[in-house]
Length: 504
Image (cartoon, rainbow, N blue to C red; front, side):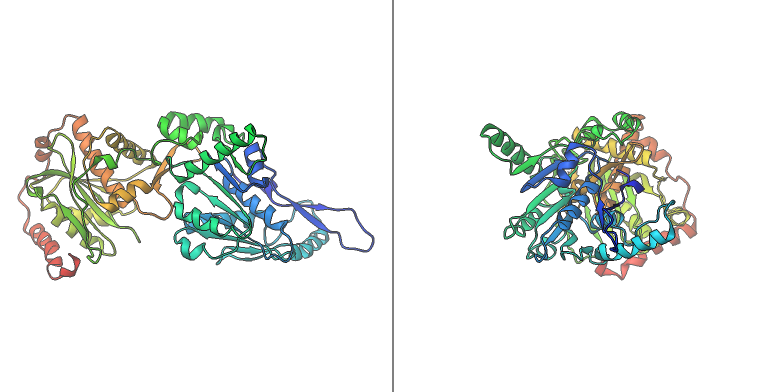
C-alpha cells in the first residue's frame, strides 16, 4: 500500500479549557479490511497473516507497534519489536515509523503560522525520541520502546531481551531459530507474537498458520476464547490495488506464482524454483573456503562441448562462470568458476583459462548490464563466439522462467554444490506496480550463480528450439588465424595467474 499524506497521524483537538494549552491526541490508519484491523488491534498470543503482495502488511504491522507501545503502562519500560530477515527491511519499517510519527509535524496549507507554531511546540513534547542508527523509538510519556531488529544472528540481535510483543515482517523468509529466539523473549512478559508476510512453501511459517487454524476450530467447537488467530490477506481483496494490475499479473505470472503472490496460498515448494534438489547428481563438492577462486570441473571436462554463462562481479558481487555440456541428452553442468574482489581484466583471464579446459566452447553468454564497453574490449580477442546480454525486466523474466521449466521437468543436471543450492533457495519473485514479475535474490543475498546459470541454460534452449546443432555453432566461431597481438594478449591472461598460487 502507498502511504499518502492523509495516513499521517491526525491531531485531534479536545475540548478547550480556560487558560490551558490545548491537549492533543493522534490517530493512525484504521485498517481498510478485517484482517488488517486484526493485525493492528487484536490482543491474542499468536497471530499469523499470510499476505499477498501490496496488501499493506508493513503499514499494518507498524501501526500495531505504535498502538501497543503508546498504550503500555508507565514504569514497565516495555519493549516492542519488529523482526525482519534483513537489515534493509528493518530500515523500511523504521521509515514507516518516521512517516506515521514524523519528527516535525507537517504544516497544512490552510494552517496559520501561529497555530502551526503552537502545534509544533506541543508535538515536540509528544513525539518519541528516535535513533535511526539503532532503529529505535522511545515514547516520552511511558518510556515504552519500539525496536527494529534483523534476524541474521538471533543469538546476538534477539535473545536475552524482555519483550512485550514481536512483529515478524516477511516471516516466511526468517529461519525457525529466529522465531524460537523471539518467543523466548516474551515468556516472562506473557507477550504476543504476530507473523505476516508472503508464503514461501510449506515451511515453519505454514506450520504456525495451520496450528492457529486448528486452534480456532477447537475454540469454536468447545466455545472457548481464542488465544491464536490466522487469516489470509489476499491482494485481490485490497480495494486500493488497481484491478488492471491484478489482471496483468494473472496474465504474465505462472499460475503457481499468482496463487502465492496474489492469493497468499501456501504451495508445496519455495518461492521460485521447484525440483532443483531433485536435479542434483554426484557427491557434495567440497570447496576450500581459503582459496580466492572457487572452481570445479567434471572429470571428463576436456572431452565436452559446452556453452558458458558468465555474470561479472559488480561492487560486492561475485564473478561466476557456469559451463553446460550441450552434447548429452540432458544438459549437464560440467564446470563452474567463482571469485570476488578482482579486476575485470583478471575476470576475463579466468574466463579464458576456464574455457580452455573444454574440448569446444560453442557460445559464451555474458551479462553486459551495467558493465559497458570495457568488457567488450577485453573480451574481443577471445577465440569464442561471445554474445552480450543486456537485461531488461522482461528478458530476465523470460530466461528465469525458461530455467524454472527446465528444473520442474528435470531437464538439467546440477552439481552438488552448496552455494548453488543456497542461491536457488533464496531466489525470490516480487511484482512491480504494474503487476509484472521481478526476480532477484531475497534480501541482501547474491544471485550471481543463478544469473550465470540462466544465461547458459537459455543458450542451450535456443540451440534446441531452433534445431541448432553444435556443428552449426562451431561454424560461427572465429575461423581466422589469430593475430600475433591477440596471441600475446591471450598468453598474458594466462601468465597473470602463474605466480599467484594462493588463488587456487
